Image (cartoon, rainbow, N blue to C red; front, side, top):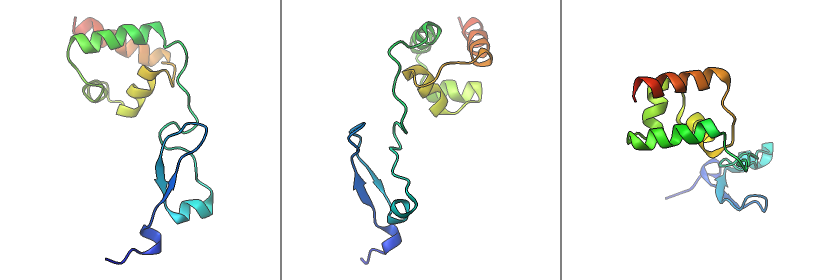
Length: 105
């Protein structure tokens, strides 16, 4: 099997996060070497207390992040970022989470 130049991948392991990932040569040319896993984001020391409560509620009901994302019409990535402390929930998200937590007690 012949590997074409644009299909080959180069392995990266940045010192800043130690994730391993692959990039195509064209990404190297255009300078996109950021880590796709953390993309420069670092988890916060303290996750929002409401989100911790939300995580407990989600696990008690046996729902995955994907289940919640589907119900709330959000991306899985957003739910994951909120739960890991990469992002803070805004007022709309908190009110939406509270609505579903009250609805599915």
